[in-house]
Image (cartoon, rainbow, N blue to C red):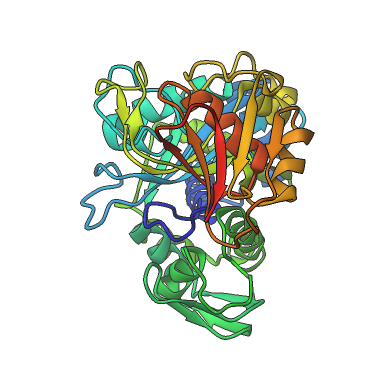
Length: 415
C-alpha cells in the first residue's frame, strides 16, 4: 500500500462520528430549549415524527465529512489535505445510515487546476469544501450538497471534553516517525492526544503485521467509532454537553442548518448504521513521475502512491445506494484481454504470471533467472501508462512501482 510514504495516512473514520455527535447533541439541546425549558418530548418519538418528515423528507441525502489535516489551523477551513473522506448516506424513511469510506489517494482528474499529485484529498486543499463536494459527488455518481469539516485539534478537544476513551489495543504499536504512537497491547484509557496518535498510525514498526496498511487502519477506526458511541455519545451528561460544544465551537465548519442538524438527530437515534469501503488494497500502486495529458493543467503527475479505481468498481460498492455514472475523470482503462506482458528477471515468478493470467492478461514468463524477493516493477513504453495501471491492478501487490522505461513492450521485473 506504500505505507512508508509520508503522504499516505489513515482515512480517519472516527472524526466524523465525533463531529456528528457534537452536531447531534447540540441540536438536541437547542430543540429542548426551544420547547420552552420543560421536559422535552422523547427524541425517538417527537423529533422523529416532526423533524424527519418536515425537514429531511423521505428521500435519501448524502453528507460529506472531511477531516482536515492542516497544521496550525486557524479554522477548520484552513487549506489542508483531506485525511478523512466519508460520505454518510442517510435514508430518513428507512432510518438507516451507510458510511461510505473513500481512500484519500484515489487518482482523480482536475483538468482546470494546477496540481501534479491529483488525488481525491487534494480537492479540499485547492478549492475548500465546494470543490471537495463537487469532486466526491462526481466520483461516486451521487448528489451531495451538505458537508461537515473538522480538524485534528477538534478531535483532541472532543475526546478530552468527554473524559477520554478506554480502548483495548490489540497489538504493540510503534510508529515513531509519523503519528509518534507507542502503545503496548491491552486495555488502556486514552486522552485526546493519545487517541489521535492511535488512529493516525501510518507505519507500525513493531513487526507484528498489525496496522501496516490504509485499509487495516480504516477497519481499526471503524472499531474505534463503536467505542465513541458506546462510551461517549450515549453517556453525555449536561455538563459534558456544554464542555463538548464549547470545545468544538472553533473546530467544526458545516453548511447544515439547525433544523437539519436536529432532524439528523432523529434519524441517527438508534439508526441501523453500516459501513462500505470503496476500493481495496490491490488498487494501490506507486506511479513514477510521468506525463499525463488532460489530468491537470501541467499534463504531468509527480511520483506518489495512488489508488486507481474504475467506474465499475465504484458501482459495485455504491450502486445499490443510487449511484449513477460515477467517474474519476480518467480515460477508460483498456481491457486486460488486450494486453500482453513479459516477465523479465522472473518478474516475481509464477505467482505474478498466475495473477496476470487470472485477470485475462497474456503473460510470458522466463525462468532463466531465479526469482528475487525485492521490489516488483511494472515498466511500460512511452504512452502506455493506462495499460501499466491495468497490470498494476491485476498484480494487486499494493507496493509495486509503475514506471516509464525504454522498453519495447509491457514488462514486469523483480529486483
